[in-house]
Length: 250
Image 1 (spheres, rainbow, N blue to C red):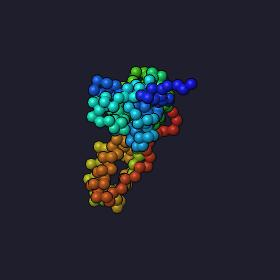
Image 2 (cartoon, rainbow, N blue to C red):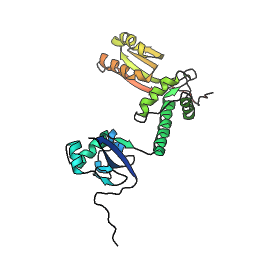
Image 3 (tube, rainbow, N blue to C red):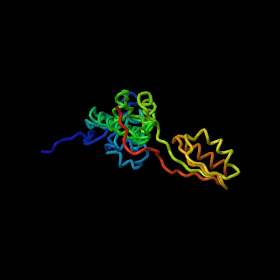
Image 4 (spheres, rainbow, N blue to C red):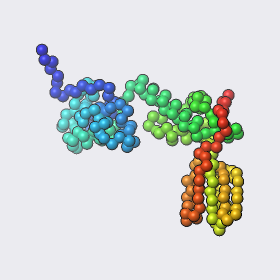
């Protein structure tokens, strides 16, 4: 006996659904899990790697395909691939509560890892462990924002943690060499961007080894390049100036 399957139904498994409401109706597309964000970030450019099918649905879980007249009315076209791109770019990704919880936990951990990697206790120059940063984030009741990047959130976390623990961005160690005729003038211009000068040698050229906050690197690089017309040099000696060992957070 043959089993009748309605022609407007497609069954899919292991699917990520992206949904968009338009023209008073709900439209959905079926994507491969973990591919939607890589498409949106530009990491994945092949639509076939992202979409399970180039069909637009009214309801993916029930396999109900959208009618052509509804697509034309809502999107002004029947081209399902183009409509899929619109929904993929602007639609809302549907995830289960369990998946959402797992994603948020992973993001929380990723943010704490970035903070631990970039920061130290300014008094001891020792780094904090990821676990201790996580605990401090929980103490300030930090809430992960799923639509915001982890790096940006890590910068927000650092600002908020400064109110409860001693924490600063780890400093970079630089060496720059300036032509003698520009040395004194440029040193004065660079001073506000330097946290601490470790050594200074002025013979035929001015050579300075110093510590800076990472956020000042671009400005220092631009001053040296522009003001010396490429004759000055800038070298990163170390990305993080930290003492060995982990900091204990009581």
